[in-house]
Image (tube, rainbow, N blue to C red; front, side, top):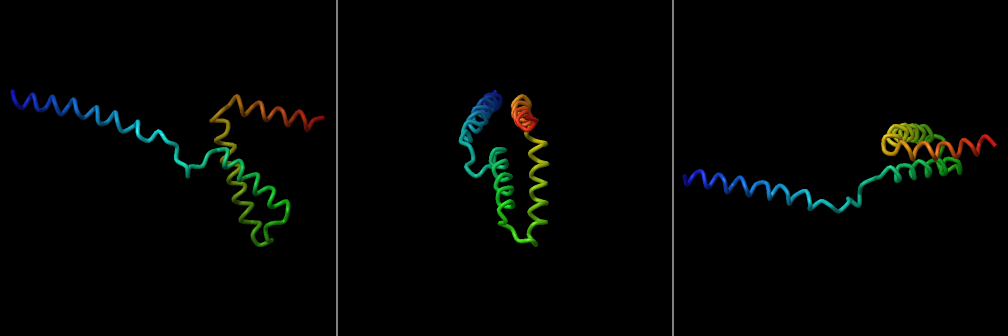
Length: 98
């Protein structure tokens, strides 16, 4: 019977330890990149290239990176907020049509 009591005590302690751990990492990682950060990076690349900030030899690498970034954002943005993605896309299309 002593062995059974010890096992029961250990079983009770394990869940309380596991429950305490997920509460600790509630703070966001300050080094994490968000979708907004990546959209900002895309805008920076666009502005810098239009102002001639890159040398001709660098343009291919910048273009490849920009295309990868745009493809990633197109894939991730609709998955994150499908309703929010439709509204902004409609507004610029209407403004361009006028």
